[in-house]
Amino acid sequence: MGHAHGHGVGTTGRRLILSIIVTAAFVIGETIAGYFAHSLALLSDAGHNFSDALALVLSWYGIWMAQKPSTAKRTFGHHRVGILAALVN
Image 1 (cartoon, rainbow, N blue to C red):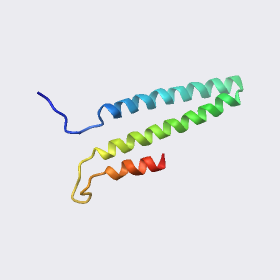
Image 2 (image 1 turned 90 degrees about the vertical axis):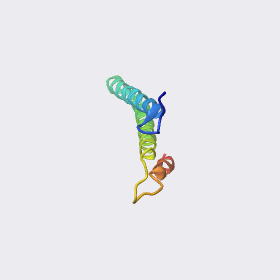
Image 3 (image 1 turned 90 degrees about the horizontal axis):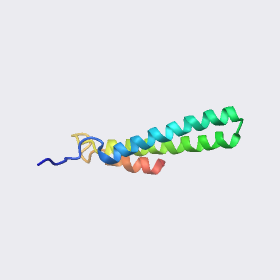
């Protein structure tokens, strides 16, 4: 019987990565469509979605860092990175 020890990114991290990819693809598509349609609304929405993608990247980074084990220098691990990522978001 297998069990997890919290190593790696996990299901949440994989879902965030998929969300980042989908959001980035949508940003690219919307930017191209906005450029060729001369639509400021599409371009501004692409910028808004880009900021959403950056927030997802920051969230993924916080989860990834928080799962790193503690060391002699960082006895509590890297859990504070998740808190700082939430603050920046």
